[in-house]
Image (tube, rainbow, N blue to C red; front, top):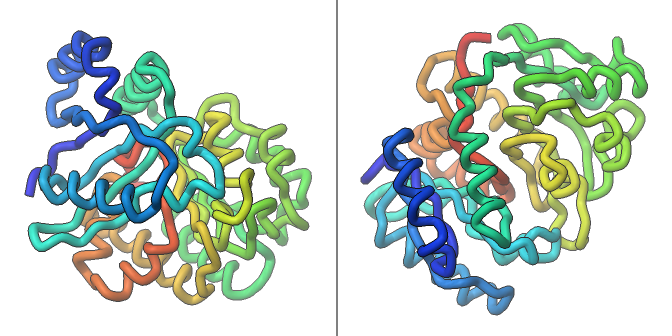
Length: 299
């Protein structure tokens, strides 16, 4: 199975994108572009079969799908590819981004491919003030993450800290499509009015339903589509608290043991370590954005 990083784009961009793709291939070996027919929101079954067939044929470990902007709503999450595909030849991890023009796609890809220019690897741990969410926060803090314990930070203090964040942000606790329930409830508008000056490298919400597929607009899409983070892990429906705890702890363990160095590699490691358990949890999740963001085990 190829470890090549594949970016899947509409075939109508083929001519326009040719020169840029050649340039990117020269300066960033290990990436390739694959063209797919233009997509429309139609039968979920048809799109699902198309994604599976394409990924089965190319046999790669990871793929970023560039979908039309009309797919960027909660009710259209059902038309996105799954996070994990487990084929006979191996596991493929996918992510999605949204663009209607090649120029929009190119700007995003160029920015993320040059992430090595960023120097900040800081991790920010946040949670709802309730056991067991504070246990998950403590585990990451003991590994070196910046502690934003809700017992020490008021709602306003958390939002102020968010505004100056750099690197990676983790959250544990109750949530829904409109709010994170930690820090006395934080809404989309709260987050967007306190977004960092520069996009976070990643946002990991080990929580429920922030990507709620029953709502046209949800807090996960609000956070991602405004460019607040280059990559977002979010759930489209409820997840058992214990399952999120397990996922978070295993994620950290993979990083600390240097078993993986990017988000894609971490997901791969989890699936290979316990396929049934982690496929069950991750089926509720989706990745938005650049899935090859590095996550160093050195905090």
